[in-house]
Length: 381
Image 1 (cartoon, rainbow, N blue to C red):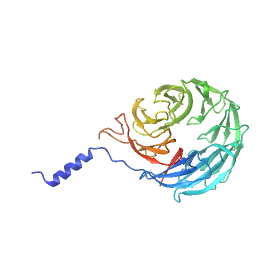
Image 2: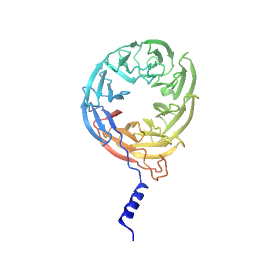
Image 3: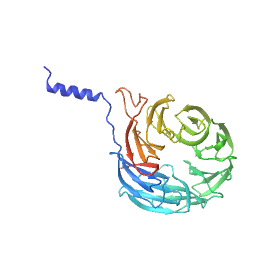
Image 4: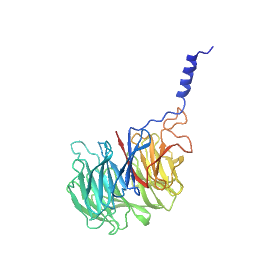
């Protein structure tokens, strides 16, 4: 006869062979709702909104504090930065240095002896790049610009590259000295500029020219200009910054660029009209691509450059946020006003390590967040 004890043990063994239970992330995702003029605080252990924080201006970008449970929200049309304290779930401080801002970036991580936690904010009116130390949030260094800027990036060696479409120039500035070093005549309008991870080369997209250009930062000279099959509008880099991915208008594909060998390696089909992207630090690594026209997210296996899954999400998906543990992808759906949660570590077989063996929907849940969510950041507890 089979005893009850044996039946329980057998059931436990079968359960161990099934799909692994999802592990929640101990933190919050702060979602910027543009038309709602607020921040929705989503608890990532329950995937529910814990708090809605009202703002007096429309937010467009969110970055997390490098070491504390705080985030910084940019309302570009008002030129205002809001500091959000995740503990109190409220606005703790705010600062305004101009009437219109372009973007913001946190100072890259540096050795402890050189570390200076600060947020840099680019203003269009007036043309200014401003340093905001996180301890005081009071403006410190200011770099005046000759023309209204459109985009910027910060390198590990404390330089900034600022693009101006009107003058078709790129300004290289020293953040340490708070001064302009040189101006590069780009010759085309650059929708975005990005440093190579070592800071020695600068990559720019060339708008309608359907190309990208690498510049030598030290001399300002053109290293190479490479053609693309589309007009690049969106980009992302993989976690080790050894690959860059571009998408844009004119082709249903993503271009894979190797910044260190300065080459466009190949283009890969990535669903209809690929837009925002995010890359994971998993084995194998994945590239997630939002497809707003079909309300889907395409997931590519970067080890094979092949389709891994197509996930149906909400209406008009935009920014994709991957949690620091690489277990969850959070997709902000602008028209439907919700956040799609995709489980990245799901297994269809116990022996398949971090591999998705299916072509459809590892969608975990949907979280209503508010009016037109456009940006977000994850904060650990």
